[in-house]
Length: 335
Image (tube, rainbow, N blue to C red; front, side, top):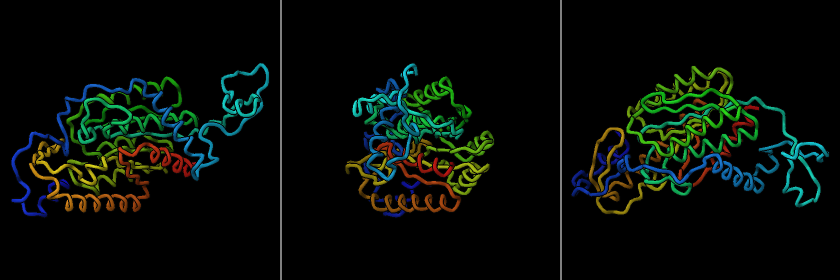
């Protein structure tokens, strides 16, 4: 039973069931076939812009002084490559400095993305940076993490799953490998999915593939067709074997999936993964719904604490800073 059903069962059903609505939402959603295009034509460039904006903000944050790109500057010597000259510093000092990079850290990162149907909420005809659904947000966030990993000279791998294990790439650091992964992430921006998933099945499979100690990021909305939470957390614990550091990015739409904030016209809610439908006025169950969702989030947080997994609830409407901040915190634990 999902949260919406539980909320309905808490109140007088006669007050909930009303005339059908022409508005189709999925678990809240519309027809997935409407997703056709993406305004994001260069995901690598967009990720670079996201990271640059984050780095600028870091200078006003507790991370001030934490290098995300290089360890120090050195004076440019005539005859050296001009590739790593810091032109911004030249504009301030009128002296040529190059960025002296740290030695390769050999830190390995594996990104896991849930591509089940519920991750394609809210349904958008076109994805853009200002308007992303959960799968689009996860793709851009993953690309942004890859940009930081590239600057740190860390290796990256990728797994994508829904009702099957759709894609796997091991952790590598070459440019060719990164471009291959970026291509997979770009495909997610225009993909459709009607698949349900049991996340724990694929987490066990992924865990068996990651042998060397790694930093693991999982993007999922934690909406399972089966509510066996113990099995899910056993799989997350399996991911932590070999001393992996695991971060769970719990992706959700804060306005509608957490606050259940809709106008009070009658609507038809359709569970995208089961096809179950219910017609209702949202305000009739908003209080019960938000109470249940809040309890569920707290339960997830406590479970993650129990299993020593970093739990990061991520509202897709807020931006990527929380994802990137979590990377730096987790990376410091690994070093």
